Image (cartoon, rainbow, N blue to C red):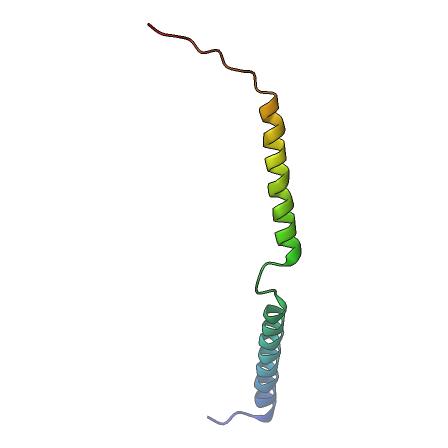
Length: 71
């Protein structure tokens, strides 16, 4: 099948656009961090420290439980 010049140029242009989109997608994926960033680890550590401190403070407010002896 022989394509006319207009159709060939149209197909070539569409192919170049597809290649450009693929290259942009690959570039965006390459820019993503592979490992969690330092700030994410820092925030996770700070949250853990906060939760431990909160649990310790809440434990101070617990009322002692009365033990009931069953015979």
